[in-house]
Image 1 (tube, helix red, strand yellow):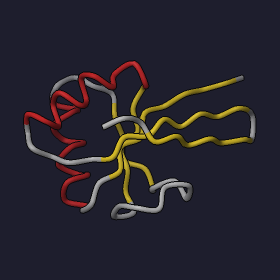
Image 2 (tube, rainbow, N blue to C red):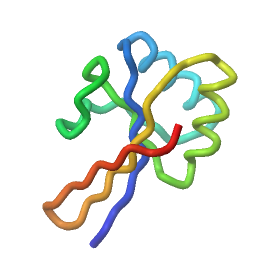
Image 3 (tube, rainbow, N blue to C red):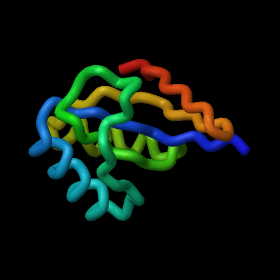
Length: 87
C-alpha cells in the first residue's frame, strides 16, 4: 500500500511549533514529527500533513511569513522516498 504525505521542514523549532498552532487553528490536520533522516536541513522538527492540503499550508505559511522547505514523503511498504517539492 502506498501512502503520500506533505512534510515541511523549518529552520527553527519556534517556527515549526508556530506553524503547527496556526495550521491547526485554521482547521488543517497537521502534526509535528522528527525530521526524516532523508532531509538534511532544518531544526530537527518537521510538520506532517496530508498531501492534498499543500496549497492551503503554503498559503497560510506565506501569509504568516513562516519559511519552510516542502517535501513529499512516499511510503511503499517499508520503503520511504522523500522528494523535495518546488518552492
